[in-house]
Length: 371
Length: 245
Image (tube, rainbow over all chains, first blue to last red; front, side, top):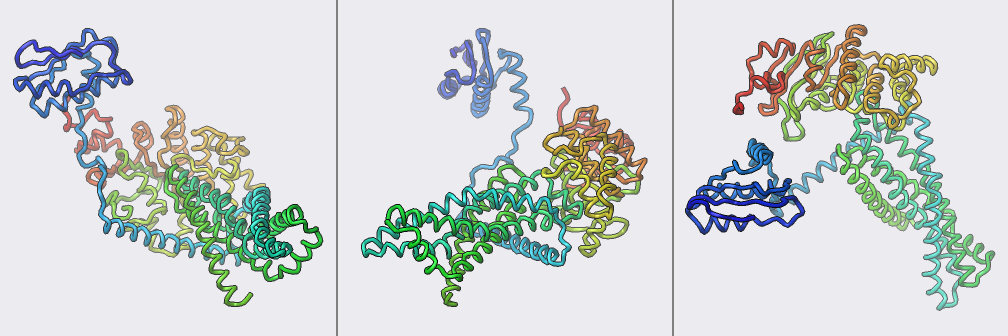
């Protein structure tokens, strides 16, 4: 770029070479300095005879010059520009930008934020209550044998959320049993009481950890899948299509998912209990030199049937919670791909949080009742 | 019509007569689809009523509303087929839910409906295995499954090539004539508007209300409103806001 002054009030910019994005292009500030210094300048003209190639890089440069020069009341003569550039510039200037539609970063005061969060909370609470009510009505309909859903779909969900979860549940609960046993082993060895590792692992896994780990796995695995599935159906208007046919999405989509998890999670818990105890057994035999019968007898003596029932009951509660949060987030999902992602994330988070809260409540109640 | 506090359109009053092919038209973002979602009962109007044969949709009990919904078929913009079911199962579902027909009869009805929309033999395909145009026609077969009195179409020609889209227009005319259905179409496809429309409402984004009601063919001649003329002539007439070159 070269700048020259053919007359006192005109600034001529000689543009040459290739002006493309990515090449190092001259900066506009050189031009605006010139305009600043020479107050006599009223016109800017261009000479592009030596210009060999251009793209949006040249357009941005020219647009900036036009914007700057209009601040100084300088007239830009576009005759010297290639005709394509002239047309594009006039096209860009044809519709003035909307002042009000640019969403600048607005600073929101703390009070305003608290207010908005409260209103959001009120909305989401209302949505949750509505969903709970509808789910309850659907459940009542099921009891009266009037609920409409497809059996084949129900069995498919049973399979997906039951049998297909076995590998991951095996792995995690085996390792959790192993870890529990190791923690106990180090402490109990000090007192020569290695055999009580069986008690620790047995009660810990069967009463709490088996159900909790299964619940968390299912929240991450199936809860997220439910939310993503229902969310995508929401985006594709598939849920609307059900509604216009007068088929309740609660009965058709939510109910089979809830039933499947309420049935499957206790069974998976039972299985996780077994795997966890086996994990403890491996440590008992491998590290603590206990023999199999010793460990087995100690476990049978330590774990009561009550512990097992509590674990299974927790499994059923978690099944409800995971399915509930998954379906809730899916049904509440907005109408875009990013909303589906949000729904899946929020299903997992609220699933896990509700599992932990429910565990605390159940444990406290059991403690008060003395079971 | 409003989402929370945000008003989309106000003061809409129009009636759709039996046997009409009623067009809801207007520029992008003016609320055509929102109006349709109100008409089929997916959204409740913020104020005012929607009535079918004098029966107010939101004024009756839940069960009566479900009964009203059965007289409605809706074709969604992307077909909205249930992706976990085959095309055949999609069309069969409303029949299974609302009729006492046995499996064999349903199967025959499904293949009849599919052949009406030119899709004979695709029963066992999943929605992801067929093209966009086929999805739309399959969606139409599903909407027609219960022989509804009113069929709603959300942008039927969007995303279709000109030939498929004119075939769909012919199909819409044929359905009206043979089944006697009333048809409501949301579209901004001018060719369709003039080819099939017998009545219409024009929604405007800026004033947030309707500008005119009537047959689109006469609207273009009679309407003095430049915004309607501009829309119906692809911007060639009635536009005085921009300088002519």
